[in-house]
Image 1 (cartoon, protein in one colour):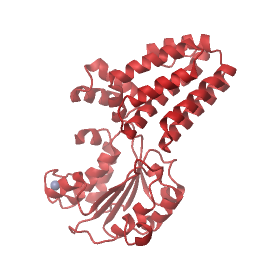
Image 2: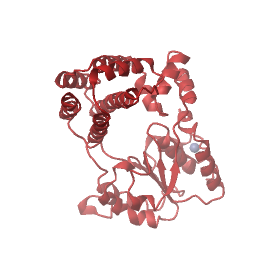
Image 3: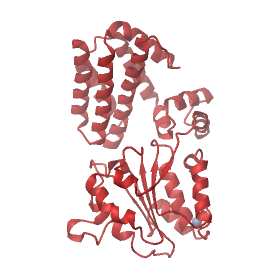
Length: 351
Ligand SMILES: [Zn+2]
Protein backbone atom coordinates (compact mmCIF):
# COMPACT_ATOMS: atom_id res chain seq x y z
CA UNK A 1 0.00 0.00 0.00
CA UNK A 2 2.93 2.24 -0.61
CA UNK A 3 0.74 4.55 -2.69
CA UNK A 4 -0.80 6.17 0.38
CA UNK A 5 2.58 7.05 1.76
CA UNK A 6 4.05 8.26 -1.44
CA UNK A 7 1.22 10.04 -3.17
CA UNK A 8 0.79 13.64 -2.24
CA UNK A 9 4.44 14.15 -1.30
CA UNK A 10 5.99 14.49 -4.75
CA UNK A 11 8.12 17.49 -3.83
CA UNK A 12 9.63 15.73 -0.82
CA UNK A 13 10.37 12.63 -2.89
CA UNK A 14 11.84 14.69 -5.69
CA UNK A 15 14.25 16.38 -3.29
CA UNK A 16 15.36 13.06 -1.84
CA UNK A 17 15.73 11.58 -5.31
CA UNK A 18 17.90 14.46 -6.37
CA UNK A 19 20.20 14.37 -3.38
CA UNK A 20 20.60 10.59 -3.62
CA UNK A 21 21.49 10.86 -7.31
CA UNK A 22 24.01 13.58 -6.61
CA UNK A 23 25.37 11.63 -3.66
CA UNK A 24 24.83 14.48 -1.25
CA UNK A 25 22.16 13.11 1.04
CA UNK A 26 22.30 14.81 4.45
CA UNK A 27 22.71 12.60 7.52
CA UNK A 28 20.06 13.96 9.85
CA UNK A 29 16.47 14.79 9.00
CA UNK A 30 13.45 15.92 10.94
CA UNK A 31 10.15 15.05 9.23
CA UNK A 32 7.25 17.20 10.40
CA UNK A 33 3.56 17.18 9.47
CA UNK A 34 0.20 15.93 10.77
CA UNK A 35 -0.04 12.27 11.73
CA UNK A 36 -1.45 9.71 9.32
CA UNK A 37 -0.23 11.31 6.10
CA UNK A 38 2.61 8.94 5.28
CA UNK A 39 5.77 10.33 6.93
CA UNK A 40 6.71 6.99 8.48
CA UNK A 41 5.99 5.13 5.30
CA UNK A 42 8.18 7.49 3.33
CA UNK A 43 11.01 7.05 5.85
CA UNK A 44 10.76 3.27 5.58
CA UNK A 45 10.65 3.46 1.79
CA UNK A 46 13.77 5.59 1.86
CA UNK A 47 15.50 3.03 4.10
CA UNK A 48 14.46 0.32 1.64
CA UNK A 49 15.80 2.24 -1.33
CA UNK A 50 19.15 2.60 0.42
CA UNK A 51 19.35 -1.10 1.36
CA UNK A 52 17.79 -2.73 -1.74
CA UNK A 53 20.18 -5.20 -3.38
CA UNK A 54 18.77 -4.33 -6.81
CA UNK A 55 19.83 -0.72 -6.37
CA UNK A 56 23.21 0.88 -6.28
CA UNK A 57 22.06 3.63 -3.96
CA UNK A 58 21.44 6.28 -6.62
CA UNK A 59 17.72 5.71 -7.27
CA UNK A 60 14.78 6.03 -4.93
CA UNK A 61 13.24 2.89 -6.29
CA UNK A 62 13.35 -0.15 -3.98
CA UNK A 63 12.34 -3.42 -5.65
CA UNK A 64 10.34 -4.37 -2.50
CA UNK A 65 10.94 -8.09 -3.08
CA UNK A 66 14.64 -8.74 -2.44
CA UNK A 67 15.57 -10.03 1.05
CA UNK A 68 16.95 -6.67 2.30
CA UNK A 69 13.77 -4.84 1.13
CA UNK A 70 11.61 -7.37 2.97
CA UNK A 71 13.78 -7.22 6.07
CA UNK A 72 13.38 -3.45 6.25
CA UNK A 73 9.59 -3.77 6.29
CA UNK A 74 9.70 -6.64 8.79
CA UNK A 75 12.07 -4.54 10.96
CA UNK A 76 14.66 -7.32 10.92
CA UNK A 77 17.26 -5.65 8.72
CA UNK A 78 20.53 -5.43 10.69
CA UNK A 79 21.29 -1.93 9.35
CA UNK A 80 17.87 -0.35 9.90
CA UNK A 81 16.66 0.54 13.37
CA UNK A 82 13.19 1.91 14.09
CA UNK A 83 12.47 3.23 17.59
CA UNK A 84 9.68 5.22 19.23
CA UNK A 85 7.83 5.96 22.44
CA UNK A 86 6.63 2.81 24.23
CA UNK A 87 2.86 2.88 24.82
CA UNK A 88 3.22 2.95 28.60
CA UNK A 89 5.71 5.83 28.75
CA UNK A 90 5.26 9.58 28.48
CA UNK A 91 8.63 10.03 26.77
CA UNK A 92 11.08 8.06 24.71
CA UNK A 93 13.33 6.57 27.43
CA UNK A 94 16.95 7.67 27.41
CA UNK A 95 18.02 3.98 27.32
CA UNK A 96 16.69 3.83 23.73
CA UNK A 97 19.54 6.14 22.76
CA UNK A 98 22.41 5.29 25.09
CA UNK A 99 21.50 1.93 26.61
CA UNK A 100 20.55 0.89 30.14
CA UNK A 101 22.58 2.27 33.05
CA UNK A 102 24.95 -0.68 33.31
CA UNK A 103 25.62 -0.61 29.54
CA UNK A 104 25.70 3.14 28.95
CA UNK A 105 27.14 4.08 25.55
CA UNK A 106 27.69 0.42 24.76
CA UNK A 107 24.10 -0.11 23.69
CA UNK A 108 21.27 1.97 22.26
CA UNK A 109 20.80 3.86 19.02
CA UNK A 110 23.83 6.17 19.39
CA UNK A 111 26.17 3.20 19.79
CA UNK A 112 24.45 1.15 17.08
CA UNK A 113 24.59 3.86 14.42
CA UNK A 114 28.37 4.13 14.81
CA UNK A 115 28.90 0.43 13.99
CA UNK A 116 29.96 -0.65 10.51
CA UNK A 117 26.95 -1.50 8.29
CA UNK A 118 26.54 -5.30 8.39
CA UNK A 119 25.65 -5.44 4.68
CA UNK A 120 28.15 -2.77 3.75
CA UNK A 121 25.65 -0.12 2.66
CA UNK A 122 24.40 2.35 5.22
CA UNK A 123 23.04 2.52 8.78
CA UNK A 124 19.55 4.01 8.90
CA UNK A 125 17.81 4.91 12.17
CA UNK A 126 14.21 6.14 12.29
CA UNK A 127 12.98 7.81 15.48
CA UNK A 128 9.19 7.88 15.57
CA UNK A 129 7.26 10.00 18.10
CA UNK A 130 9.93 12.73 18.17
CA UNK A 131 7.29 14.95 19.85
CA UNK A 132 7.99 12.85 22.93
CA UNK A 133 11.69 13.51 23.25
CA UNK A 134 12.37 15.06 26.63
CA UNK A 135 15.40 17.18 27.48
CA UNK A 136 17.36 14.19 28.76
CA UNK A 137 16.63 12.09 25.67
CA UNK A 138 17.41 14.99 23.35
CA UNK A 139 20.71 15.67 25.11
CA UNK A 140 21.77 12.06 24.71
CA UNK A 141 21.22 12.42 20.94
CA UNK A 142 23.05 15.70 20.41
CA UNK A 143 26.50 14.31 19.77
CA UNK A 144 25.20 11.85 17.19
CA UNK A 145 23.23 14.60 15.47
CA UNK A 146 26.22 16.90 15.46
CA UNK A 147 28.74 14.39 14.21
CA UNK A 148 26.80 11.67 12.44
CA UNK A 149 29.00 8.65 11.65
CA UNK A 150 29.96 8.23 7.98
CA UNK A 151 27.37 6.34 5.92
CA UNK A 152 24.63 6.86 8.47
CA UNK A 153 21.18 8.35 8.16
CA UNK A 154 19.00 9.46 11.06
CA UNK A 155 15.36 10.45 10.55
CA UNK A 156 13.27 11.93 13.36
CA UNK A 157 9.52 12.01 12.83
CA UNK A 158 7.23 14.45 14.62
CA UNK A 159 3.97 16.28 14.06
CA UNK A 160 5.19 19.86 14.10
CA UNK A 161 8.39 21.81 14.15
CA UNK A 162 7.26 23.79 17.21
CA UNK A 163 6.95 20.63 19.27
CA UNK A 164 10.64 19.82 18.86
CA UNK A 165 13.30 21.09 21.21
CA UNK A 166 15.43 23.87 19.67
CA UNK A 167 18.58 21.80 20.20
CA UNK A 168 17.12 19.09 17.96
CA UNK A 169 15.61 21.44 15.38
CA UNK A 170 18.82 23.29 14.78
CA UNK A 171 20.79 20.11 14.13
CA UNK A 172 18.49 18.53 11.54
CA UNK A 173 17.47 19.26 8.01
CA UNK A 174 13.73 19.87 8.29
CA UNK A 175 11.36 18.24 5.81
CA UNK A 176 7.78 19.54 5.90
CA UNK A 177 4.92 17.27 4.88
CA UNK A 178 1.65 18.81 3.78
CA UNK A 179 -1.74 17.32 4.68
CA UNK A 180 -3.13 15.15 1.89
CA UNK A 181 -5.68 16.70 -0.44
CA UNK A 182 -9.34 15.93 0.27
CA UNK A 183 -10.00 14.77 -3.28
CA UNK A 184 -7.07 12.35 -3.09
CA UNK A 185 -8.24 10.92 0.24
CA UNK A 186 -11.84 10.62 -0.98
CA UNK A 187 -10.84 8.82 -4.16
CA UNK A 188 -8.62 6.31 -2.38
CA UNK A 189 -11.12 5.61 0.38
CA UNK A 190 -13.47 4.43 -2.35
CA UNK A 191 -10.73 2.35 -4.04
CA UNK A 192 -9.83 0.77 -0.69
CA UNK A 193 -13.47 -0.07 -0.04
CA UNK A 194 -13.46 2.02 3.14
CA UNK A 195 -16.05 4.43 1.76
CA UNK A 196 -19.36 3.12 0.41
CA UNK A 197 -19.42 5.48 -2.55
CA UNK A 198 -17.99 8.76 -3.78
CA UNK A 199 -20.20 10.88 -1.59
CA UNK A 200 -19.31 8.89 1.53
CA UNK A 201 -15.65 9.23 0.53
CA UNK A 202 -15.99 13.00 0.31
CA UNK A 203 -17.75 13.19 3.69
CA UNK A 204 -15.00 11.18 5.38
CA UNK A 205 -12.27 13.16 3.63
CA UNK A 206 -13.78 16.40 4.89
CA UNK A 207 -13.53 15.15 8.50
CA UNK A 208 -10.02 13.83 7.99
CA UNK A 209 -7.97 17.04 8.02
CA UNK A 210 -5.67 15.63 5.38
CA UNK A 211 -4.94 12.43 7.30
CA UNK A 212 -5.69 8.91 6.08
CA UNK A 213 -5.70 7.46 9.58
CA UNK A 214 -8.36 9.92 10.62
CA UNK A 215 -10.48 9.25 7.56
CA UNK A 216 -10.42 5.53 8.34
CA UNK A 217 -11.38 6.19 11.97
CA UNK A 218 -14.34 8.25 10.77
CA UNK A 219 -15.47 5.42 8.53
CA UNK A 220 -16.81 3.66 11.61
CA UNK A 221 -20.61 4.00 11.75
CA UNK A 222 -20.37 3.68 15.51
CA UNK A 223 -18.34 6.87 15.64
CA UNK A 224 -20.65 8.88 13.40
CA UNK A 225 -23.72 7.82 15.36
CA UNK A 226 -21.99 8.67 18.64
CA UNK A 227 -21.22 12.07 17.19
CA UNK A 228 -24.89 12.60 16.34
CA UNK A 229 -25.82 11.53 19.87
CA UNK A 230 -23.36 14.09 21.29
CA UNK A 231 -24.71 16.81 19.01
CA UNK A 232 -28.20 16.04 20.37
CA UNK A 233 -27.08 16.39 24.00
CA UNK A 234 -25.02 19.50 23.33
CA UNK A 235 -27.74 21.27 21.35
CA UNK A 236 -30.11 21.19 24.33
CA UNK A 237 -27.90 22.82 26.93
CA UNK A 238 -28.38 22.07 30.64
CA UNK A 239 -25.82 19.34 30.39
CA UNK A 240 -25.41 16.76 33.13
CA UNK A 241 -21.61 16.47 33.34
CA UNK A 242 -21.78 13.23 35.27
CA UNK A 243 -24.04 11.44 32.81
CA UNK A 244 -22.15 12.69 29.81
CA UNK A 245 -18.84 11.50 31.34
CA UNK A 246 -20.34 8.03 31.84
CA UNK A 247 -21.55 7.93 28.25
CA UNK A 248 -18.16 9.04 26.88
CA UNK A 249 -16.28 6.47 29.00
CA UNK A 250 -18.63 3.68 27.87
CA UNK A 251 -18.11 4.65 24.23
CA UNK A 252 -14.33 4.75 24.63
CA UNK A 253 -14.25 1.39 26.42
CA UNK A 254 -16.48 -0.22 23.80
CA UNK A 255 -13.61 -0.13 21.31
CA UNK A 256 -11.93 -3.00 23.20
CA UNK A 257 -9.46 -3.64 25.98
CA UNK A 258 -6.39 -2.29 24.15
CA UNK A 259 -5.28 0.96 25.78
CA UNK A 260 -3.85 2.55 22.56
CA UNK A 261 -7.17 1.98 20.78
CA UNK A 262 -9.06 3.53 23.70
CA UNK A 263 -6.76 6.55 23.71
CA UNK A 264 -7.15 7.01 19.95
CA UNK A 265 -10.91 6.90 20.34
CA UNK A 266 -10.92 9.38 23.21
CA UNK A 267 -8.74 11.73 21.17
CA UNK A 268 -11.34 11.79 18.47
CA UNK A 269 -14.15 12.35 21.01
CA UNK A 270 -12.23 15.35 22.34
CA UNK A 271 -11.99 16.61 18.79
CA UNK A 272 -15.75 16.32 18.37
CA UNK A 273 -16.17 18.57 21.40
CA UNK A 274 -13.57 21.03 20.09
CA UNK A 275 -15.21 21.17 16.67
CA UNK A 276 -18.50 21.92 18.39
CA UNK A 277 -17.04 24.61 20.66
CA UNK A 278 -15.18 26.30 17.79
CA UNK A 279 -18.34 26.32 15.77
CA UNK A 280 -20.15 27.83 18.77
CA UNK A 281 -17.74 30.75 18.70
CA UNK A 282 -18.70 31.40 15.08
CA UNK A 283 -22.40 30.75 15.61
CA UNK A 284 -22.52 33.31 18.45
CA UNK A 285 -21.43 35.95 15.99
CA UNK A 286 -23.85 34.67 13.36
CA UNK A 287 -21.11 33.34 11.08
CA UNK A 288 -21.59 29.99 9.41
CA UNK A 289 -18.29 28.42 8.59
CA UNK A 290 -19.21 24.77 8.41
CA UNK A 291 -20.49 22.74 5.48
CA UNK A 292 -21.80 20.21 7.97
CA UNK A 293 -25.56 20.80 8.18
CA UNK A 294 -25.95 18.68 11.30
CA UNK A 295 -23.24 20.62 13.13
CA UNK A 296 -24.70 23.90 12.01
CA UNK A 297 -28.19 23.17 13.32
CA UNK A 298 -26.69 21.81 16.57
CA UNK A 299 -24.75 25.00 17.24
CA UNK A 300 -27.69 27.19 16.24
CA UNK A 301 -29.86 25.56 18.92
CA UNK A 302 -27.02 25.48 21.43
CA UNK A 303 -26.41 29.21 21.08
CA UNK A 304 -30.01 29.73 22.24
CA UNK A 305 -29.91 27.21 25.09
CA UNK A 306 -26.36 27.59 26.44
CA UNK A 307 -26.24 31.34 27.04
CA UNK A 308 -22.48 31.47 27.53
CA UNK A 309 -19.98 34.11 26.60
CA UNK A 310 -16.95 34.00 24.30
CA UNK A 311 -14.55 33.89 27.23
CA UNK A 312 -16.10 30.73 28.63
CA UNK A 313 -16.01 29.15 25.18
CA UNK A 314 -12.33 30.00 24.85
CA UNK A 315 -11.66 28.43 28.26
CA UNK A 316 -13.58 25.34 27.29
CA UNK A 317 -11.55 24.96 24.10
CA UNK A 318 -8.36 25.32 26.14
CA UNK A 319 -9.62 22.68 28.53
CA UNK A 320 -10.14 20.29 25.59
CA UNK A 321 -6.59 20.92 24.40
CA UNK A 322 -5.39 20.14 27.90
CA UNK A 323 -7.43 16.91 27.98
CA UNK A 324 -5.85 15.90 24.68
CA UNK A 325 -2.40 16.55 26.11
CA UNK A 326 -3.25 14.47 29.18
CA UNK A 327 -4.02 11.46 27.00
CA UNK A 328 -0.58 11.68 25.46
CA UNK A 329 0.88 11.85 28.97
CA UNK A 330 -0.83 8.57 29.84
CA UNK A 331 -3.46 9.81 32.27
CA UNK A 332 -6.07 7.33 33.48
CA UNK A 333 -8.90 7.49 30.97
CA UNK A 334 -11.90 7.45 33.34
CA UNK A 335 -10.46 10.05 35.71
CA UNK A 336 -9.46 12.21 32.78
CA UNK A 337 -12.93 12.15 31.24
CA UNK A 338 -14.68 12.83 34.55
CA UNK A 339 -12.51 15.86 35.38
CA UNK A 340 -12.71 17.15 31.82
CA UNK A 341 -16.53 16.95 31.72
CA UNK A 342 -16.80 18.58 35.17
CA UNK A 343 -14.56 21.43 34.09
CA UNK A 344 -16.43 21.94 30.84
CA UNK A 345 -19.98 21.80 32.08
CA UNK A 346 -19.95 22.77 35.75
CA UNK A 347 -18.09 25.88 34.66
CA UNK A 348 -20.64 26.57 31.92
CA UNK A 349 -23.52 26.18 34.38
CA UNK A 350 -22.06 28.85 36.68
CA UNK A 351 -21.46 31.30 33.85
ZN1 LIG B 1 15.02 -4.64 -3.06
